[in-house]
Figure 1 (tube, rainbow, N blue to C red):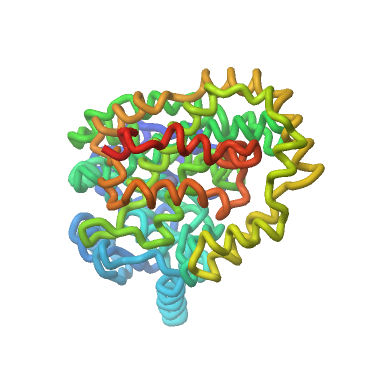
Figure 2: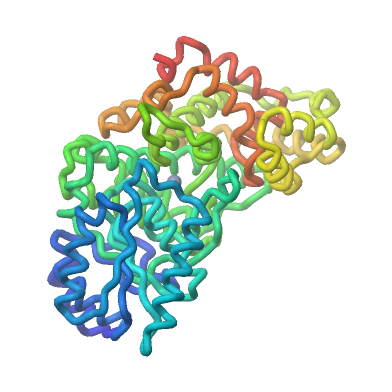
Length: 464
Ligand SMILES: [Zn+2]
């Protein structure tokens, strides 16, 4: 890469910097600014030489930005192809579709005499996830042109896809180059920025989940990525009104926050820095293909509701006194592995999902004497953990206010759920990931049902 031209461009155009980006081993260039697309051809050339480009977009994102990328690349004599997918409501993040795009890349590669073709994802969540997966499978680098500040995956290595009905995250590689043009992002539908805000807001309860796992000795905090996300989070979330109005400065903060959490995931090697029970709850609805008014409910909308749910449970938990737990009695009432198999199979009608959930549970499930030890540790560490959670977390009503101002959903009916279905999700969300969260501490302490009954009652604003 041409460092000199990169730095020249930085002073001229890169008004915004993303913390941690210089430590990314995969992302060479991330430009966030107004009119960032003006330099598309130069930047493509700097990073990919004379490679052909394959623009991957859906029908609406091609109109929003894909056509401009096409013209700029073609005008600069880049051999440019397109792969236009159906528009978002019909576009699902299916692994088979990703495989088909990988085939297209390999076909182009076979015909090309020079460098490997470079996929250019022009779109938001699904387009980027499919491209990331396809590029990785076809063993080529890719470039991303985001069209909405709608989710946290632009800089991430993981491609959350649906494989035979089960939501999985496949580790791939982040884009080598990201061009985030604020003029384009500001024209995205306002609700999409609300989804991105919801996705970023979820990092607050996800931080609470990590504190729980840290204090119980299950997964220690990381000294680099914890501050990268958590020390900046409230600042990135500080302009909800501007997000709803599509103001460029507010969208830039939001994009930077989402981009930095993606980098944190890359540096840490898993999604722990950015994803906890809030995302597990959201993944259940994504696997169930949750739809509202004929549209698939977006990831960020699911996370907004998941995050409020988890903060509600945390608000309840921090009022409890776990030092009085009777460890022996609690462990004796807990199901053993065979009992758990029955519970998980009953929770998921789809046998494949139940089997995958049990694989995840094998990693974190404890019973018998090990559970007694875990509960003793809980009792011993509770006063410290309780304080840390109080200090770190935002109260649910405060988060509700922010989300509502940003235009994100704050009631379960905003995403087409009944209170019963919402509560059923809270009961089963912990089964689908090995990651330890507030749902696990509540479950192991024998408190999950009480927490649901006392905090997620019919009068909760989530059910208004
Ligand atoms: Zn997310």
